[in-house]
Image 1 (tube, rainbow, N blue to C red):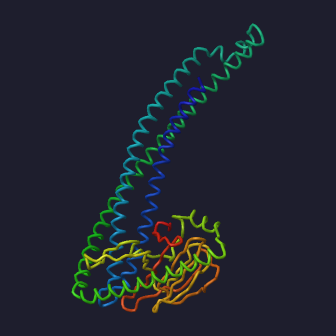
Image 2: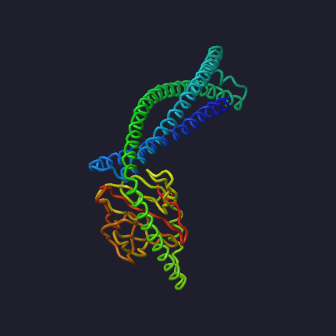
Image 3: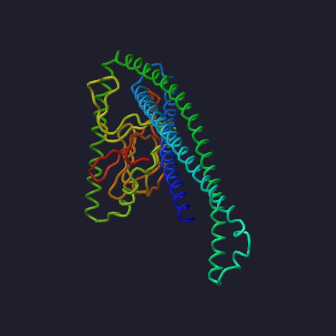
Length: 391
């Protein structure tokens, strides 16, 4: 009987605990997302404060504001998920409390029944004559064991009652805590929606100003496309040369390639802090709705004076100048990472580099006062989205 009751109470508590752990993990994951988004929004706000010192609105300023709007929108959606998860959790706690209270009443009844049995048999249970009046030694042992088991059952049942009371109190306390958290999240979300509306209005105003100088913008787009084509042609040539060298000496660091590949989604960012202002692939131009700009990597706006940081162990494949800024390419077995738009460079071709090592000082634009790193990731000749590799 003891064993059966023990298994039952353990199963009930284990079910509640698993439920609680799964919900807690979900809420914790969302909390981490919130912290990450809040940090990125704060970074973009700091960048916008510096760019706002310029008299004229710039494309970079608009791109940073667009990135901030996207992050703020993501933050609001994450708050929605948090509130939903907590509501689900509080509902679960109510069910848990009801079930535990039923279990508590059941245990109390069973305990009361045991006390009645104990009272009716008190003379036998408390009197050694019950044991010594046995017909033989085996019967005496059985009677002694019966008394011990009965006392153990009473003790165990009382422990179950106490444990269930503690469990109910924990559920009630957590339920109240979650209710307060939900209220706080609703207030915070409301503030974020107000900030989002302000950001959108500011963006519309800045885009309207930029559209007044459409001819200048089109010239800038043409110039940027030309620079991008030249950069990509240079990159492809360098990679082809690297592949030719590798084919000639057949020295491929397969272990390094495997290590790099196994860290997909875990690589550190190539800057200490920053905001992605231009995604991988096709990007709509901030002011020209019919113009799309192709990006083979990601553009990360960061603080002035920031350095480009190596994302994984490797060897510097090459360092070259684009005519205005510098580019560093690092080889990681069959993979390459590229760090462009650098002023000073701290490494040279052939150098072994480590994760987090400073590769160069990121260039800050004179006209827009924005510091932006262009970052790409290649596997041999295949270009891929670097953001998917970063943690």
